[in-house]
Image (cartoon, rainbow, N blue to C red):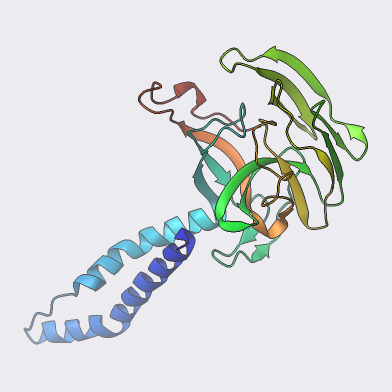
Length: 259
């Protein structure tokens, strides 16, 4: 079951129990105490009174402000690494009600180059993270052989930076996508999927920064991302863990802003 749904149910249940006790049973206990009788508070009521404020705070923070996510793969290298833990700004693209995801307040829209978390169109229970390349109405061309990206007939500026020392066969490049300057990876000898893509209204075209190792809008199951599937904009790395065998925490990545 969706964690957001569980959180809503738990918050509602504990709050209802606490309220019902305050309106009904608490008065009965006071009357009994005035007559010299002691009526113990129910364990369920005690736990509900203790947990309701905590659950409510978590629900508000997670639903409307910030939510933590873990990066499970290398598809966004070098921007994000497998094992990075990030904060996602939930209100960047508008406030939505939890579970039903209905937008109640318009705040902003994704910009080209934003790193976004979204629910996978083919399986909304799965969250993906990619970079926004195409906005509604854009025509995106990705030439797989040359690894060049064109948006509305304009080639995206790319500066080659050389080979990646700890990634054999991988070249590093700096790309200017909208107002976002960021690094991307190209794998030599690998030709990933290319093509021409016309972004429908209300949808977005996304790609991973690890261009030859990313399941993104070029592939079936991802394709164009509906605006309603957006979760929020990735903001900052708050922890990075590579396992004890590889050295544990990546201390230098903690606090890194996501560009």
